[in-house]
Image 1 (cartoon, helix red, strand yellow):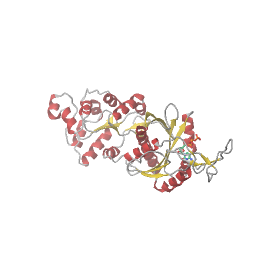
Image 2: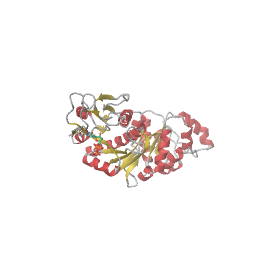
Image 3: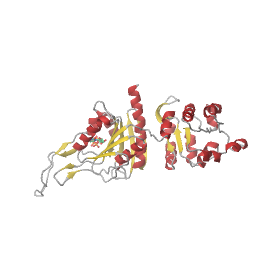
Image 4: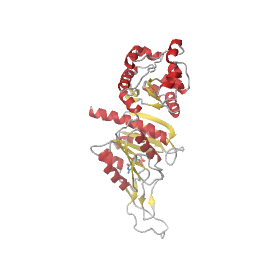
Length: 389
Ligand code: CTP
């Protein structure tokens, strides 16, 4: 534990872990002991609490290296901004930071801090560095904070932390349907209208949702990508077929993520024979395709709806308009230039919802997908809890 008001939740976390039959050794930083007395954790864990570093008596009991070897998992809850910074730089000037450096056990961090501290580029960068080294960030959640502000920074609830430690994932048991890839609208038997979408973001999201424990259906246009393991895949060609497949999946969908680049228009009449090049010019009459996402968002009952917006200008205002007009719960907007977006391995996203916004920094689509799935999961549970309470 590091110092923070969320330390009170660590009492419940300790109690639940012990109740499940785990052996828990509590290590507290000096700041943590100012929030809750070590005696409380001694009573809850049934063991002496470790606070001192380089203390001859304490090291004789179980020193920092032995503690690091003993643990099957190290969970820092709450993890303060200061502690994340320290760890990102490999500092080891107290028992907890030394232990985290010296352990080969999986390291979990449950950040808890004021929303501006969490959003600060320094904290975000530290989190990204720690994740890239294999540390797993559990949360933080959005919501009301002890400081009176509302936003991302709350420590996850102890039961949520335990579910994540069990590998059950944030979306355990939640049914997620995704669309991905381009659609192909026939002009004649050999030609199509399509776009450059590779499907990679949609497939990465499907994999990340599955990793987070969801039951995942992926409805995809033509792409050259393998099906992520554990994902149920349906292949379609046209917007019309995608629309039909999505509506069929709707009764089994809690979260709908529309990552497909659906053609907005299709040839009004597909020629039944190959069009010959007799004329000097050729006009095609196009008609609108069904807006799948808008149809799902206006269905009743409706799942939690997440849309994508690829924009070349006025990113935020266009995305906010789409969020509102299509009645979405969340929209992920990306700029399709500067080597980002369509056909590119990297992406960067501005994620918007009613009353909130988060920037996901440029990263490979796989990593971005994991971050987006966490955000979707948190918002999904919050919206659901508000609706049902
Ligand atoms: N979408 C959909 N069905 C369509 C068109 C789009 O489900 N027929 C979904 C996409 O999967 C994406 C979002 O809607 O999640 C994109 O919104 P849209 O307003 O269609 O974006 P653009 O096509 O970029 O719109 P515009 O050209 O108006 O900017």
